[in-house]
Length: 158
Image (tube, rainbow, N blue to C red):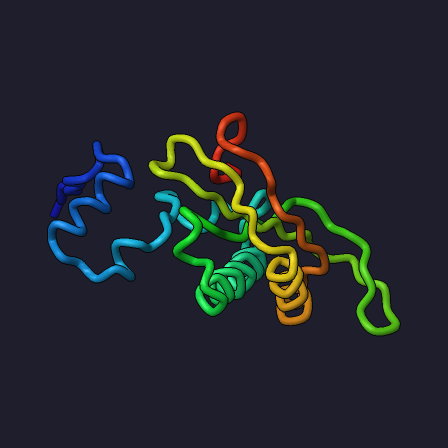
């Protein structure tokens, strides 16, 4: 049977949807949740999308978001995520050289998502997250932090 997709909030901006959530007395963890791309996680993989790349970006993102919550920065940023770059980098693990993926971390502050500034997270925090990712996610050996504002960049990389 054919069905019709209902999108009652399609024409609203994220900040307007959050206001409706407050009027409906939804829990803060739902209202304050960071936006997620409509097309899905694949837009955060700038290269071939396969099970391995999905695993890498999902794990890096999980660690980043987990630490934002744990260290009290999650509600200070509008959106944060990991992006898997189509670049490999030489690294060292133990006594051996590695040739693995580069992962970008992106965190922005914004009022409405129309413009955004990169989040000035503490270097100690970023270093801690980077170390966790390269030590826990086999296949990623380098982390970069995106310091681009919107405009000229966009929040998402794709």
